[in-house]
Length: 180
Image: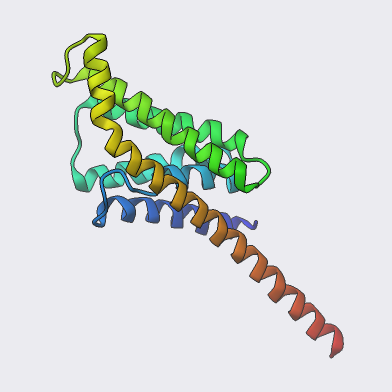
């Protein structure tokens, strides 16, 4: 991929992440994990961390900031998912993409709900309170999981289709020049 292509992809991913958070959507059904995984695969480790964080920061600027400790855990969870994804989807296979998307959703759910339990007054600081916190988060996790799998699959398919169509066009142009 050319430098211009990488810049365009990075800007597009940030834009998609921001739009996915600002436009009406089901709770937690956003493209943030998907853009993290796509950035990790096509752009590398550094971008897999900074692209989702940029999208989150811009979105939070418009939606409003929240509890600093919880926000830090959200951002660190995304950074961790970005680092892991840049290593785990080296070779694009449907089963690997689905597995990494599901694992990423789970990491995000487990870490952020643990932070909600730890840093909020909503749940008692007991095992029962932690269980209650995770149980209350299950509907959000379901939405996040579906969104992550759908967005991740769609983004990878769209980008790979774009590469394929570009290669077809380039081949056709080369053949046309060769016959002239």
